Image (tube, rainbow, N blue to C red; front, side):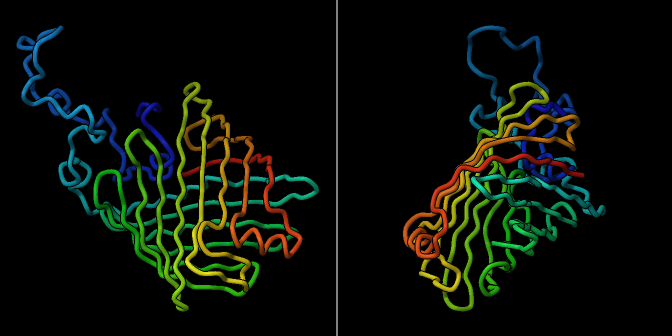
Length: 280
């Protein structure tokens, strides 16, 4: 596989339905069985069977992809996207962000977990158990539950959303949540891999959380609650293992910022991170 076409989702899901490996395609499929003698090297109209240049799936539909025809194999994968030490002024913590899945081509059980450990205690931890169903070669739909733990009382949410690759290989997670108290929430995460070399990769990342109602018990305000934006530079010793360093800006806004100020907490901070990214 050419690393130039790989990204976060491809690394985390070996033989994932979102992969398009040109090396596994039949040459006749790639060329559309075009006769080279009939092709003009310059100028002229595109051949009738030329694929749409705006598409990023090489003209393949979900059912047409060769490895989608076999549902007899169970597959497994673990992706630790971020396992990092976070340093701010006078403070240090450990952050994790991982996904693990098991299943077949179309349907899989997916666990997503993200949280922070500080002074040996868990803070702002989110764990999701989801059913992932392939809806296109590059997108999964999700349905399941989310549990929040750490500071404040634990909460349960019903979760549904999508995860996959937008055009230009933009990794996207977008999930909507509803809890038993009638509160709703929305979370979006975007990542993009910029290849400086075949091994040195710069990754911009943005995450934002929204809530429908004020939640004083958890110091969360309605509307946009917090935003994290950062850059991480990783070096891939191999495709499955890469240490990285980076910087991240984190901010709470609106009523969430008011709660933070009332508790003498920082509203805006710059974080320096160092960690590892690995998958198998």
